[in-house]
Length: 160
Image (cartoon, rainbow, N blue to C red; front, side, top):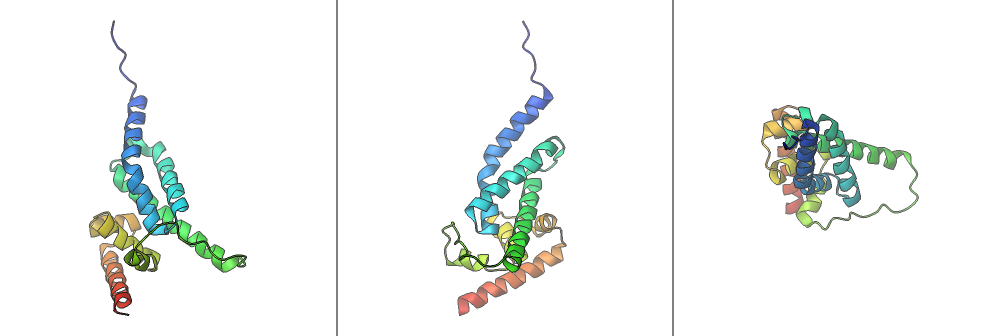
């Protein structure tokens, strides 16, 4: 009796499940470093995987696709939070960050979003300028400029 070969759909599902298990911790960490909020990090990482799943069979570079999706979702999250802060009346003190970061991470968190994203993607994820530019949707020269400004800001903070 012959064993039936698994369908291509089932193989793709198994591959995605494996990718999900392997990539989940770093996806949450990336989102956490970009948002500085544990709950949002998990939600945004989950949203990135949910957006990726229907396109899984066509994704040539799944890790890059996931990373870019997380960066974009975090950017949108920051825009939404900025809008909420400027348009909604302040009813209570803002909640503090759930992540236990050291002083350096706090200094990075104080940077503008794009500068922070460049540093996190470069030094935490080890990406090249070209890969960072792809994730942020900008040129490699812009990545260099953002990194330079971010590092200058961090140096100023250390010197004070």
